[in-house]
Structures are given as C-alpha cells and as structure tokens.
Image (cartoon, rainbow, N blue to C red; front, top):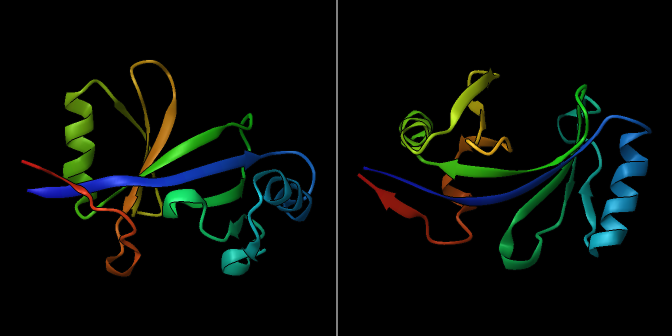
Length: 127
C-alpha cells in the first residue's frame, strides 16, 4: 500500500531571468513569491500556497518551457510502477529522489516524495 495526491504545478522557464518570470507569474496568478531562489542555485522560485493548498513554483529549465504537474507519493517507486501500469513511462531520475515521467498522451509530469508535514489534501491509497 502507498499513498499519492496532486501536489501542484511547475511553470518552466528557459528565457529571461528567474526573478522576472516569478514576478510575472506571481502577478498573473495572484500569488506572492515566498522564496525567490529556493536552494540558492538560481533554479526555483516558490510561490505562497495556490488555491486548494497546491504548491506552485517557477523552475529554470534547458528544454522548451511548459507547465507540468507534480504528484506526491509516500513511496515514489511504488507510485511510478502504478503509473507505468496505466501506460506512463520513466524519462529521468532526478537527484535520486524524483522521477520525470511521460503520460501516454505525451505530457510530462513528476513523481516526488511526500513530506509528512506537507499534506494539504488527503492522498489516495493504492494497493
């Protein structure tokens, strides 16, 4: 048994500065930027909670920009296997903690670890 739920969404940016992207998207979505440089590497800017308690970030990337969903799981590997059974495929294992995956319809998404203190919604339980 493991649990998972929608965590939120990531807004990928390739061009311009992370600060400018966070300012634009924060204004567009009505969300405050609570950490303009999470981790100090110039890769992530974190917003305050989005509607429904979802997590939202701007993320610097090297590929064409897109918006993608994150799914949090208390057992990342079990969730990845469950999603593979539904037709998704593994793309990249990042920092030995999360998986970038691709849906059968081509959309990319991430499966990330669920932190105990970060449960905003009841996760689904899977066999």
